[in-house]
Amino acid sequence: MPKLVIRGKNRLAGKITVQGSKNSSLPIIAATLLAGGEYHIDNVPDILDVRKMLGILKDLGSRVDFTDSKLIIRTADRIDSGDMPDCRKLRASILMMGVLMGRRGCFDMPYPGGCRLGTRPVNYHIAGLKQYGAMIEETESSIFGKCDSLTGCEYTFAYPSIGALENMILAGVLATGSTILNNCAKEPEVCDLCDFLRKMGAKIYGDGTDTIVIEGVDKLTPADYVIPGDRIVAGTYMIACAAVGGNILIQKIEPRRVRYLTKLLKKTGCHVFTDSVNNEIITLADGGGRAVPYICARPYPEFPTDLQPQTMVLLSVLHGSSKLKDEVFVERYGTAKELAKMGADIQVEEDGVYIKGSARLTGTTVKAGNLRQGAALVIAALAADGITIIEECRHIMRGYEDIARDMRRLGADIVWKNETENVDISG
Ligand code: EPU
Image (spheres, protein in one colour):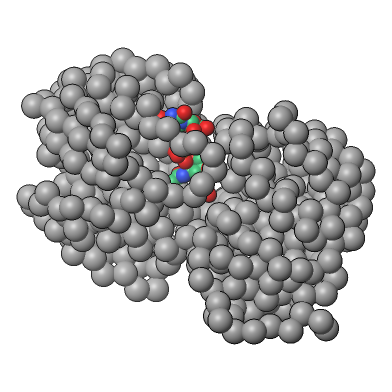
């Protein structure tokens, strides 16, 4: 796996255009299986997870042309029953359940892989799809489902799961009759999927609220779409600026998508200016603000779990004590161990992470471990004295097109190295 070598303490300055959203692209790419024909999707990030999702589509007979963020997908008029081995490498492959159930009335797929963030069950996906009348069976390594015809239903999510909701929507748009979904996830990426499906002719109402109503249609047709900017990547760069200090302009990001983070960064003493007409955000920071005493990651519109590890780094370098809790993935605290190696004063307890700020971080060798942990450690390295080596960086490539390219544009000293290349971290 490639590694990143970073010399810290450069202030960040300059402007950057944020890549398209990973978590909008993945369900939208899956949705192209719902109707045969040609789709043009722009601003798609060139990241490993997108490449894996496209691999699954190819296994199912789609033809794919992906260059310079422009994606053309030609979906077959008949969907092959491919093996889909790439499902094992990608959590979002679970969306094949809803898509294939809707289009073909059956699916047979390996269990999805993805970031290890603690246990990631699929019980809401299965319980939901069964409400449409589907029969679903699980073995140790795979899931199989079948249904002669899906019938609209009412289903209430025990928890507002994003993926389970997306599966219910993907299956429900071609079901017979009406579907009412309660306690729905309200993340902007769910709304992006619904916008795309409406362009394909689906009838979906209420996305972005607790209750979504779907009126099933007989047939969908291909549509074109432009993927919005990635709020988690933009948020990562805003947090980096707050931790290290600097003055950065992020372009192509709708400010409403990072509203909670903007409020939080202002509380720490940063200046954040948003322009909702041109979709730009300026972050100004001196790199030495005050910590916020308590932050808890919860479903949208509250603070996102996908920015929790990056925020852990920020709280370690700001002044004051704080507690950080994740109520979405309650075991997602792996970054703390790596951060402690760099000198952070941080304690993981059952009810969250306790951080004593003002840490003087020092470069050392750490492991990315998973996608957002990797991004968080990049921020820690940028704020640290000396050189940091981040190993296992393939995880970062799942969600960031090229974090080193982006950070270099902002003035950081960061390069990719091969796993086997030796690096002298003495000076
Ligand atoms: N859950 C269950 N049973 C289920 C489904 C979910 O118990 O059947 C639990 C999960 O274990 C978790 C919570 O519900 O504790 C929320 O999970 P959710 O289903 O909302 O997550 P997801 O759809 O699997 C998406 C993102 C993740 C992001 C989470 C939470 C995509 C492709 N992935 O995952 O993104 O962390 O929502 O916001 O949209 C990332 O980008 O780094 C990433 C991991």
